[in-house]
Image (tube, rainbow, N blue to C red; front, side, top):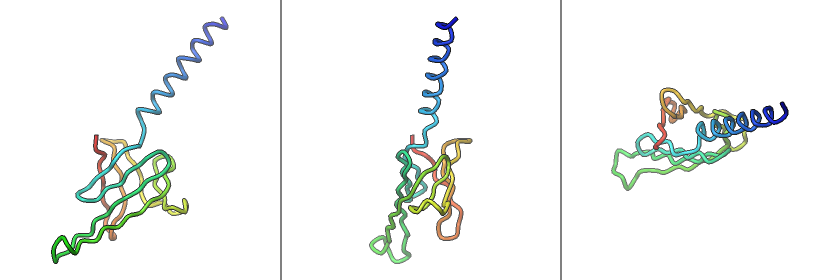
Length: 107
């Protein structure tokens, strides 16, 4: 009986580990020239503000912060700035310039 419980425990642990790895939020999410990269419990972003006067006047902004579960926070960890969704595909929803945007994960 003890051997059966040990085997079942190992199977349950293996299943949990593989589920966590397959549901990882790690990756690069993009929308146009904008990009958010998630690696573990941190995120970094590059946002390109396109100028009407030509690409030489475009502005590139960089930022980073904390990932907790399916939520993105600023670097203080107190202000939620976005969320990660798994349905219908991995994506991040956040706001940029007062507009809600969705960035899709590149596979």
